[in-house]
Amino acid sequence: MASWKEIRVISKKEMMGRVARFKKLKGSDGGLPDSPLPESQRKLFAVIGFQPPKKGNNATTSPVGDDAATKPAIPIAEGFNLGYCKAKPGRGPLMHNHDTNETFIALTGQWRCEWNEGSHKQHIDLNPYDVISFPPGCARRFMNITKGEPETEHLLMFVIGGNAPKAEFTPLAMQRCMEFAAEQKKQSRRPKGRA
Image 1: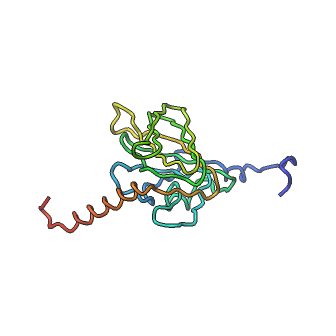
Image 2 (image 1 turned 90 degrees about the vertical axis):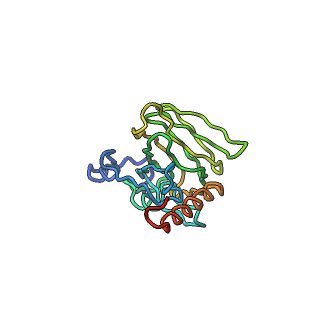
Image 3 (image 1 turned 60 degrees about the vertical axis):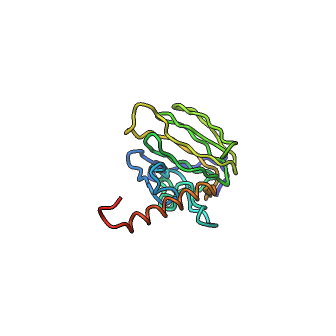
């Protein structure tokens, strides 16, 4: 490739491959360990980047899940990833961390961003256009906490460093996922008509 200092002509067709129209984005509500949990229901939109990482274990995944990671709207690898999360109040991912920086920008509604677990847990609430940036290795989560609109989905943007970033759910988050899966399995075995 030529030096960036050498101005080049880009055709409209080529540039259109780098355009993502929000209303045409295809979101995914699965592919993450916490996706089946009621409190974690959300839709993730992979806009730029998000090549799937190499998996180390069941807790390691792409930040947007395996499904969305394979079909970003703009599939380029330029050192960062950008996406959106849409969720109703009370919903968001379980505690997880990344191998790179992750930045959240509230677009609509109010979002709570938490970090650390147990007695070290902290949080800050974001209003539209507020930003928080988490360093690698810091356990974090976010949740829509908008009041008075229980059925309205709100939007949060996230920017994550790297071309194929990894996310890993914390041991407590994975424990919650396993407990929920065991309860679902138990309920599916019960005879109909019994609670």
